[in-house]
Image (cartoon, rainbow, N blue to C red):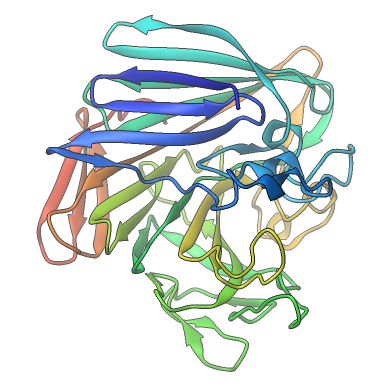
Length: 360
């Protein structure tokens, strides 16, 4: 695997240049090394050479850009598109005042557009700042980030205000000989602590179960509010707070992938458990679905970017982590004056340096 490694004071990352996945993110904080991103357990196995697995599945790790999100059924490409499955070239890689900046370019085009990725690390900031730009091209394109974290003993989750949560018409694993799911499909609720289950009960989306054996997918629609959109995941065993932030005007939905041992076939083999994807995007499920009539559009939520030969589409995203002194549920996030503060349900708070202008 050819990697790009960059670092600033207190933070470092590695990116797999063959598929554009962040292979590792390491944050130094309060004498600890936080590693909030997930790496699939099969990456180093010889079996990853099986021909019918996409490159992105073989190297599944960290965070990557999906363009389109899910099925590439307009322009032929593997699941989640070429940005998550093909090589990137390093165009710039240099120190900047107070940190480090790298710029990369996808070797392939997407809908005729050149895709560039900018990664920024700042001294003393426990966050990766990202920008993606589709330059030129034509037509409409869905896109989403795909950060993943993993929890050995479950955790608690909080969100910026959401209008509702909804599932698609069909589950990820409808065949009981291959896997399982817990939620109702389709289903919806405005109360994230009470999502309808397939068995008639309710499921709390703010609590990740340590003992689940299901595979589920939920779409959260942002509600109007000031400030960034955010997801905060307090990992019980790891005693840290994984933070994912966006500009809701750019990426109006957050999709949760609850991959908790619910797939029995290779390469998953029931061992991909405790994994939570926090996938901020402008998309429906699949490229064609994003361009056509869909429920999100009918709600006034955009599900694709419009490309133009002489223009550029840019959007930004942030992810990182803060240490927690003890397991505590997150309650709210405040980003202002060069800091981010996470208020916890027990009345305490944790904070860190943060570029609060980056997502404005």
